[in-house]
Image (cartoon, rainbow, N blue to C red; front, side, top):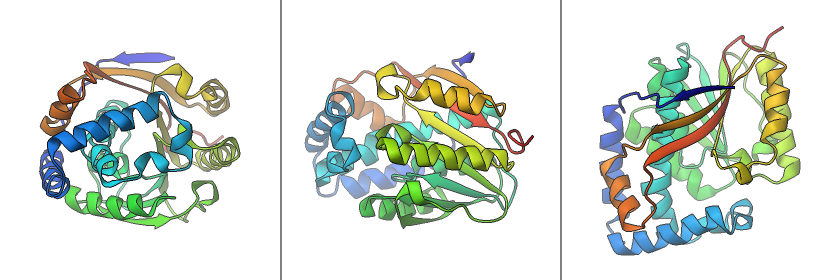
Length: 264
């Protein structure tokens, strides 16, 4: 297992425009203090009440949705952009980026920007709010994408050149759905498609990780743990301080199979 350490890619200028628009959108009806309180509650769900993630109840209410959109989504975008850049995970023009559990579209939007090519995103999520938000996010970032409300365990991959992304998603799935996604991603990699899985570094979040590492290792996957400098976009840094979360570094772990890397 390699440890790239503090790999750093300058964040793209598109992030600034996106986050300015998001701040105006979400703070039009909520105060900064209200979103900060909601962020503390949402953070406790991720750490202490993870059962609420599986049924989607963690994002009930305008405050928690604003907290996710203004804090966690940008952090996911920053980590994904820096990781994809360090991995040199470029995508060819015309590739369709299939986002399993797209959420607000931040991670796939970041990969599309880092790809440096004209790609289209196809996102899938069980949340109708997330699906609407993903379309807005991609538009704000200047990338093309469409999102569909769907069970990610039942996603059927399109024909043609694709890349598969599962970012901060698998840890929230029940065992049966997680197994279905694992099988789908392995099949995609064996067919020559790029696959990237991004998960939090915290060990208790993903007790299944070692099995995935072993399975994807049989087809030549690269596995990394990342500790990135904690430079955060302004709105994220403000909420980070206000909520007392103190992200001095950004961490993640990844499984990556490049295009044609899993084909035997």
